[in-house]
Length: 129
Image (cartoon, rainbow, N blue to C red; front, side, top):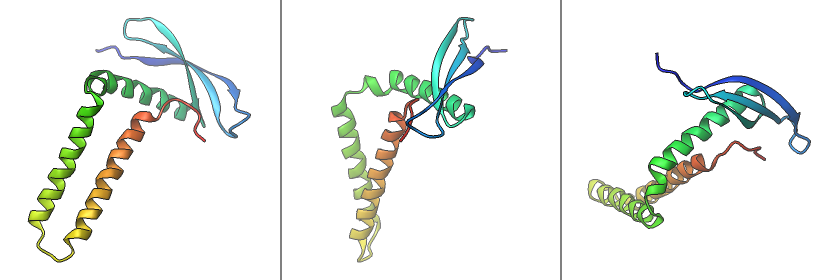
């Protein structure tokens, strides 16, 4: 059986005075090598705080393997190429008179998707307003 990281203890530290309903926990995590670390976690309840800790670990893993290895100019070029591919394929596949509206809709959807992915990477284990 493969040993995974797991939360072994969680302790409520305090309730937030600035954000009503938010709590600060201190989570004790046992790593795969047997070492123990304590991580602060914020959430509306313990399950929310634990999910934020897991989310942070996933983001750090993806960032270290993919995101930080590609320069920002590479991401800009990839975004423009993806947009060009979508617009070109739609332009040649649609022969209707409202193709412009379809293109604008696809561009907006593409931008929204990009911003959603960017927001997912920016979410951290912090108190949201």
